[in-house]
Length: 111
Image (cartoon, rainbow, N blue to C red; front, side, top):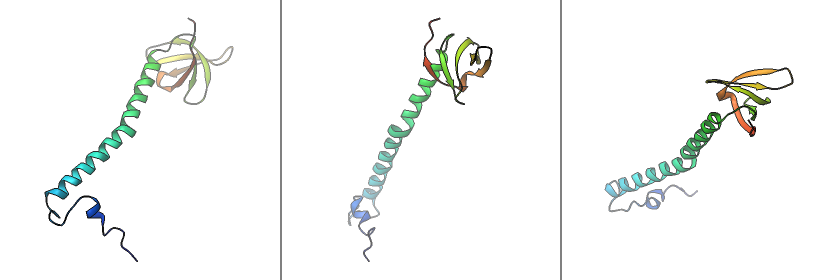
């Protein structure tokens, strides 16, 4: 059975002359740097953008907007308070939600 990891140091750029020396250390730092860049562009940056967009959406809530809560409740915004919104879900039913419980704005109101 062939050991597939026997050539790993050679594949990572370590030569016989610099095995255990600074060449291997530089290769290791470059590899870690690339991994950090990949994590930043694939995970951290999109998450920050998503949080910014959600914050903008919550700040732009106004009377008449049709919204969906994180629990799946659909309704129309009746009033917007500092930390919460009142949502009309039926003819005589109004619910007060924390602004952070609003998942999305389905359509914008005219008021």
